[in-house]
Length: 439
Image 1 (cartoon, rainbow, N blue to C red):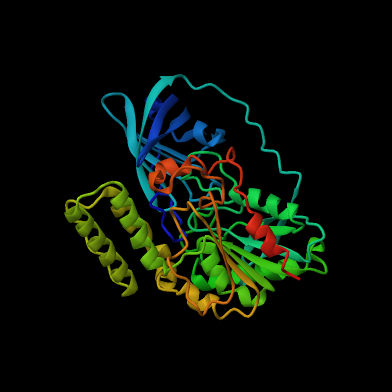
Image 2 (cartoon, rainbow, N blue to C red):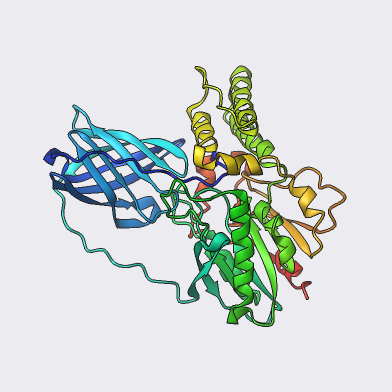
């Protein structure tokens, strides 16, 4: 999966509302994600300037979610999914064949979608989701007093309490990402595993989750400031009374955690980028092109374009135009990295050296990778200056779920099938042993 390593916020465009009763009804179709199709079901109701709707996404277990900003203008329609990470938006047009065709955008990525009318709309009762009884909901002030939301889970006898930082893009406190087409709550699962080791935890939504404010401060300073604020909030929790703090970062969250780990008592860096973000993005794309058997000329052209985009970001310049022959997935990746509202964050993080920061930590630290992670992986050599613990979990993927397939067979869509709730965590015994060394 080409996964942008930056936080994205979408600005929902609005369309003038005009009567279009022909668009009312129940529609079924798919979002065309590279390598797979995600089924969706949409009900549109209304006329004139007043429209509403619901959406179900069976592969994600989402049922009858209320749509927001439903706008109809002639044969054009747009609608959003409020409160969902990455601010999903659909924008389409009713064609001569009676189908709605358009683009779906979320978390900085854009994919085509199509809908065919199946019948008339029918009202459906929507059940409110049940909170996890193990979690206590919490609100606390982040950087510059920005309100953050989190979940607290009590621990046991272990002398540490964990503060968890999620990975890149529209990934929430539970490590759920709407671009994963199966129900997936890896962060919640990991918090439960920590609880089994005697550690309570605080996990929180990043400041842009559910936001549609294009002016929201999502700078590196703001996001690292939020981590420090979460550590401060954790020290005041009754569940953490008398305990030291373990800062747990995942993927991009581990890179950001390195910049705040001096305010914790220990650091656990899960799926840490083994190189700078800029280098890792190029390696991720190269690996996908290699795995797809792309011709050498095609790979060279596409990687050169991507390098040009990254250089433009470094120099705060406009990115190069995509020539004919550039893969659409790479064009979409470039667009997500160069969006005006997120470009500053991408530029600030692109060349951060994770090992330079890790070797300067004055607290106990472990860096852990899944053996079958295709997004971030253990480098061939770890700098000798790093004095912390290095672990690789056998048969573990990016979310540390159990993955028994050969790594070479795990192209993006195939890999995602074991990211879901139905896949158990891998055997984390090596990590459990390290946690016992924390005193």
